[in-house]
Image 1 (cartoon, rainbow, N blue to C red):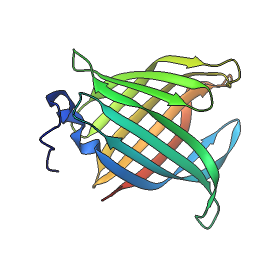
Image 2: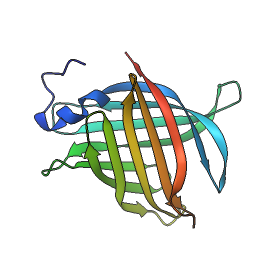
Image 3: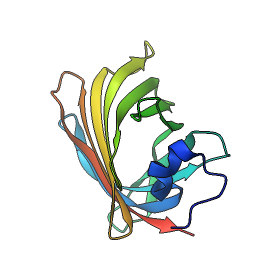
Image 4: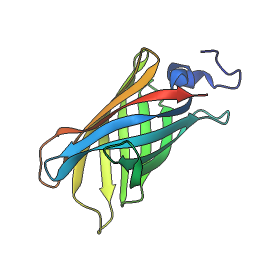
Amino acid sequence: MQLDADLPTPLVPLAWLIGRWEGAGVVGYPTIESANFGQEVEFRHDGRPFLHYRSQAWLLDDDGAKVRPLASETGFWRIGDGGDLEVLLTHPTGYVEIYVGTADGARVTLETDLVARTPTAKEYTAATRMYGLVDGDLMWVMDMAAVGQPMQSHASAQLKRVE
C-alpha cells in the first residue's frame, strides 16, 4: 500500500486499515440466535492525527440478501502519546465505548477501558476486539460480556477492500 503523503506520522502503524471494506460475518450470543450479517467498514483520515471509522451492518437471509439494518457504529482511532491505540466508538443503541490496545504490524488488539450506556440501553459491561490483515482481507473478531453473561464470542467477519 502506498502511504498518503498527508498521513500524520503517528497513524503510519494504522495505514493498512485506510479505505473501504465490505464482506460478511456471523453474530451470536447466548441471548440471541446466531445469524449471518453483511458489513461495510470505512477508515479515512483528513490529515489530522486520527482515523475516522464508520461501520454499517445488516442482517442477511439464507440467500445472502439484506433483510434489515443490524448495527452501526462510528468513531475515531488514534495513537496516544505512549504509542498505545485509543478507539472511541458510539452506537445508536445507547452505548459509548473507549477501547485501548496496540497495533503490531497488521494486527490490532483492543479491550474496553470504559463502556457507558444510556438508561434505555441493554446491560453491556466489556468487550475485546482483534483486527488483522490476512491474505489481503480485513478479519475481525469481538468478544463481549453483556446481559449477565461472561466474556465470550459475539461476532466475527471477513471483509475485502473495495477500491
